[in-house]
Amino acid sequence: MTAPVYDNKGQFQQIQSGLLDGEQIIAVYDAVGVGTGFIGLTNRRVIIQDKSFAGKRFAITSIPYSKISSVSVVSNKSWAGQYFSTGTIAITVGQHVYEVEFRGSEKTHHVHNVILHYAS
Image 1 (cartoon, rainbow, N blue to C red):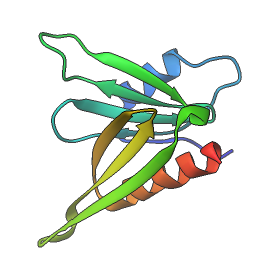
Image 2: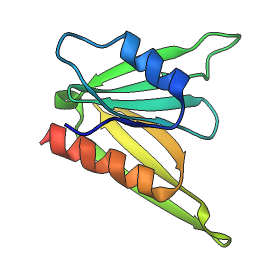
Image 3: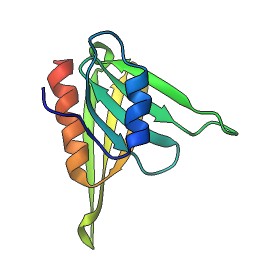
Image 4: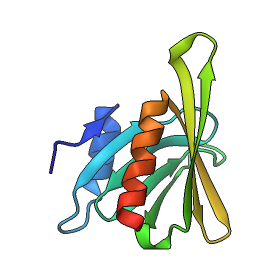
């Protein structure tokens, strides 16, 4: 397995501290927009930090790949070019859709491809 990729060492360490036996990190990407702190991908699950709760509370949500029914990519290329572009991933689990927005569409496509690999 290749070395994990990440945007923020603190976020990577937070995911690393909660790994299950035999679980390996694939990527941890910082998210932009309201509510979401980051998304982590392991060989077993997707982990999303949600900061949208009142006060200083936040949630860490673990989603086993087997529970994901669909994954979508929405790209929004800025007029300023690729550097300022964003992409959004939408992960459907039951009736709930988790949306995470990233700086740069390449991260969005990587998340999409990893989820498809492990969910199929």
